[in-house]
Structure formats: structure tokens, C-alpha cells
Length: 426
Length: 84
Image 1 (tube, helix red, strand yellow):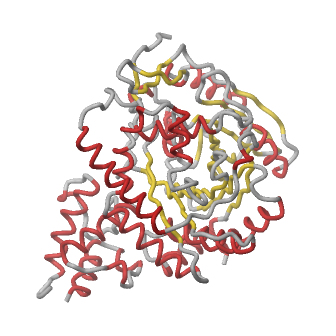
Image 2 (cartoon, chains in turn blue, yellow; image 1 turned 120 degrees about the horizontal axis):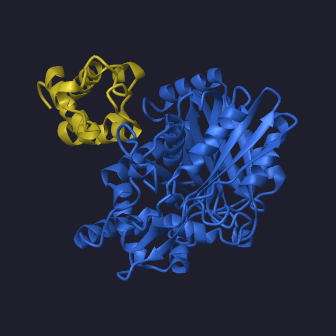
Image 3 (cartoon, one colour; image 1 turned 180 degrees about the horizontal axis):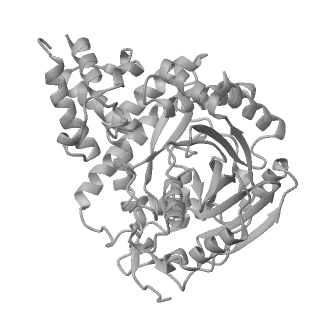
């Protein structure tokens, strides 16, 4: 395979992702990775395994690389030799044995500099195909698009937007203006609110842990109808964020924690139709949502509060400005960038992370094997150390509570998970 | 706003949906739902911002039911009703 020496310049959000990756350097996974789990309806045959491995052997060199800096300081991704994608298999007695395997796999570092690794778990009559991705190269939606491309047998993956073609060192005025908007928003939050966050200083080297909630089609339809009724059409993400606020507020009350909550809500900036040429690197930004804890609030109150903020953030173009302004941050060395990302809102980056990946980009079958479900397992960086991540697949809604071991006791995480699930099923 | 008709709103909506989704306005089918015409959650929020700017209507504060967004025509009628 020819080795590409092309430089793929990183955008500002890639640099944020690199800072989060740096924050995870002492954890067992040694990086900011995430899994995509495909729950298979039938066993994955050896012929299909071979087809997948062949597809992986043909992956572009981009999948194996590292971050470098050009002479003008713009960071770029330098492709190495062709990636060697590790593929392993292991059996599980039944579905209950899967979560420990997932946790173990998630906490293992990606091999060498390759941005992807695959594991097949075989259960009786079914199985799980798990893909581990590095956030340096993929975001959640990009990883789904990548799997779709593998399934469809795309040969020219490199054409799928491999980073910025040039270092984006122009348009300084635009970048500074965007920076001004972001800085004003940041100051407005810092001046008015004291953000509650769980103590996370001791989590630097802790492993990642997960709790998974899966709704069947009927319960998923119920919650979506309820969301339309209570939050209005197109507000399902806000409805789910409100559930997180309700449950986390209750949890903070039990701990007698003071302060308001800040949810940095991930926003996908790919836009209409999710163009398939945005597979690689990070295309997201975030919309900071404040949840004031000055009085007792019901779900409906949180919905109104968050909806108004999402609207005003969108009107002020906060997510887009953050993306543009972050181009300026690429001058910072990663240790400093990491500190900045960790403390962007005073002593915190947020109280709890939140995202909702709606409308899966994956078809209901992968390499001819029917899929029962698909969900994302992001590893939380040590700070803020906890997040709730939702996705939908074929009319099913999943929630993953991802946290660093030690941020909560096991009883607390049980209760928090139970309260989220109860709200989702009500 | 006086004499706001559903047809006027519809013409504006088609242009706005076209700008948000990048689809030619002529290819947008007003009998289809907003999501069938490519509007996502963020796209819907952009639409609401545009409606607020153009017609001075804060739709987020009023009741929007699923039937209001079941078609571009229905949404135009809802905006016209709210604005009258």
C-alpha cells in the first residue's frame, strides 16, 4: 500500500479532542476512545469475519498516524504506514457476560497508533461486534458513517473529508469575532453562576465504567410521544437533557452539593442529510446549557428552561462560534489546552456531559447480519468524570451512563441509573 | 402583524427551509412534514429564530403540536393563525 504523506490539518474541535485525549493519558485506555456496539441478530459467520478483516486490511493509512505541528504551528495528522487493525474474538456465556467484556475492552489502549480496533463476542445464536475508535480521528456520527462505508464496500474512504486541506491560518478577523462571542458567553456564565461539579481530582488514572439502559420499540415510541406532547416537536434532545437535569439535581441534593448545573450539550455541525464526506475528524461543537438549582423543579420546568437556552444559544450562534474560535486555540500546547478545556467555566468544564445522537446512519444490517441494536460507549475524560449519552437506532432509544470509577459509589450510580431509566419509562 | 396569510408564510417558509437544508426551494414538497423535507432539531430551532425575526412571533412559547408540523402547509397555517 502506498504511504500517503499528505498533511491533514486539524480543526479547532480536533484540538479540543486532542486535549481530552491528553487528559486521559494516565487512564488504563491511555486516550479518549469510544466504542460502538453492534448487537447482532444472528452469529457473525467466519466468512463475514474474513470479509470484515479484508475490508480492514484495505483501510487508508490515515487510520494509523499521529499529531504533528507544522512550522507555522498549525497541528496536523500525519499518516503512518498502513494500519494493522487488531481483530479479536471471545465467547460469552450469555448476554449478562457482555458488559464486563465491554468494560475490559474499553479500558484497553488502542494498539500502536491505529485509530480503530475490533472485537467479536460470540453468544449462543447471536453476538456483539464492537468497534473501538479514537476520538482523535472520529466523532460518534463519523464512526457510524465509517461503519456504513465499510458495510457498503466503499473503496475510496480517503475521499471522505480527511481533515482540513490547508491550515486555516487566514480569516483572523472572523476567528477573533467568534472568539469574542464565545468569551462573552463564558463570562456571562462565570459572573452569574457557580457551577456544581463532582470532585474529580482523584480520577486521573481511574478506569471507565458504564451503565446501559435500552428501551424496546414500544417504550421508545412512548417516550417520543411523551416528549412531543410535553416539549413539542423536534425537542426530543431537550426532553432527554431535561431528564438528566431532573435526576442529577436530585442526586446533587442528596449529596447536599451547592451550585447550578452546566450541561455542555454536544451539537453535530454536519447539517442536513449528514453528508457522507464527513467521516473523519471531529465535526461537533457544544451548546452550554445552564440548569439553575435555586428551587425545586419538575421535568416540565427544566424543559422550558433548556428550550429557551438552546434557542438563545442558536440565535447567538454559540456552537458555530465555538468551532470557529477554537481554531485560534490550536497555538496552545496540549498540556495548557487540556488545563483550559478542564477549567473553561471556572473550576470545571461542566457538571455532567450530555449528548443525543439521533437518527442512526447505520442500516439495520451489517455485512449481511441483522442488527438488533446499536449504541455508543464513550469513555468519559477524568473531568467532569460523568456523562449521559443517548442514541437512537431503528426506533429504539438507548442511554449510556459513562463515568470514571470512584466519582460515585456503586450505590449512587445504581440509584442515578435507576432514576434515569424510571423517567425514560414513565 | 396584519393580514398575514398562510400563503405568504408558506412562500417564506419554503425559502427558509431551502436555505437551512441546502435543497432547491422548488424541490420542497409543502404537503410533506418538516422532517421529511430535511429539517432536524437544530434546523427547526433555526426556523423558529427566523420566524421570530421575520414575523415577530415567539412560537417556542406557544403550543406547537405534532399536527402543526405534519406538513409545511400546516406549519404555515399555524404561523399565520398565531400572528393574526
